[in-house]
Every structure is written in C-alpha cells, then in structure tokens.
Length: 93
Image 1 (cartoon, one colour):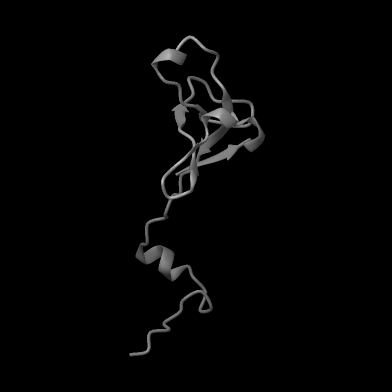
Image 2 (tube, rainbow, N blue to C red):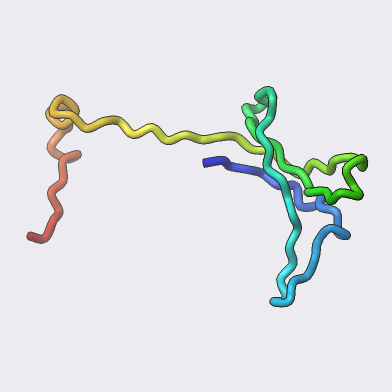
C-alpha cells in the first residue's frame, strides 16, 4: 500500500477537466523516488504532461511512502503464549 498526501491548492485549474457525468478529473502520475525523502517518502506525485508539455516544468503536488503490513505466522508456540482473554471462540456453532 502507498499512502499519499496531495496539496490541492497546487493543482493547476487548467488541467482539471469536466467529464460527461459532470464530475471533474485530473491526470496525476505516482512515481517511485530514486532516494528516500527526509520524512521517509518513497514516492512522488505530479501532474501528468502531454507531448507538447514535455519541456515544461513538472508540477509536483504530493508525496507518499510505502507501508507494509507484516503478519506474524501463527504457530503452536504463539497460541500457547496467548492469555485466555486473547483466545476467543465466538463462533455460534
């Protein structure tokens, strides 16, 4: 999972387009950083460019970091180490 933070005030208004359903959209690019940032950011978010805009400055609007959830393997030893309150058998059958 990658958690990102977007600065909405930095989004260029001319890049926001209205779709036929009446909702507004903007194309963004989430890219992996070469080096981890000061606050652990592993990704950067910027406004997508078309062919004509390739030489234009990149508009960065956010950053993010990878979050990994590690699940501890369940073994007989880990079950034996649980207290009675942590072992619940709440199945109705």
